[in-house]
Image 1: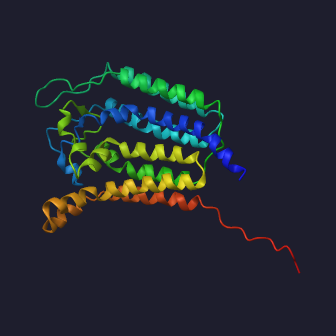
Image 2: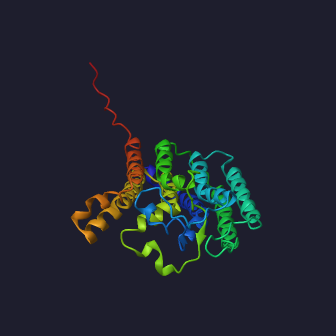
Image 3: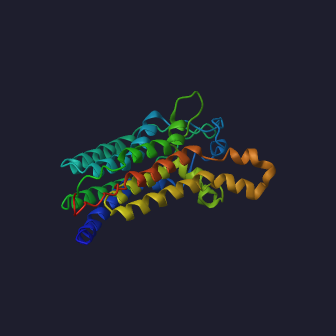
Length: 298
């Protein structure tokens, strides 16, 4: 009974930490409002590696920037869960480094479109600046209410993030084919995969949204009581399972059972592995029952 008020006092500090991770993920989430070049290749959603030849490869600098922006919420999540005295300093240093790289990238060539021979569009840095400033403010305010480290299940959370990053990593490998991670085209929002039933899991997977989701769930669950923490993990796991089989179910519903082979290609097995790892954190979180002491020893 005495621990309930103590758990409630963690909520404001926990909300600030989750808000910092969410704000750091702002540039990643903003990119999902447009069509990425990877989406334009239906083979990616169908689980194969062939990429349409006209998709332009992003320059290595812009791919590196995209990876840095994607991994920043993950790094902040790890620092906040570790809760060391240098968490705020290291977090702000990482943000400033990525922001400086973001500003520097404006002057770098993003490549040219192979069909129009025009430079690929470059995002304005102001949305990223706003998101990162909010992140720094949240970290500074959260530092006034230190929390104990949350180490339970952190290895499983990290493994789940690695599993969820399979598609993004595959698109970034120099496999001799065009890779499109890091280039986001200005295409009418009406064609976004978010609005196509059976394809939102591909959109979330290609853009790295599910990586951000797992990092956010890890931080949010790390400051909550045991039962609430398990609910957050189970909810995240269920969402990942839905993303795993969403395309499979959509193909069967629309095309029928005769397209079972094609539907199977839509299953995103790496997300199922990520879901299993996230749900496994709920078992690591349980404390083994203790046997009551015998008040009348023999």
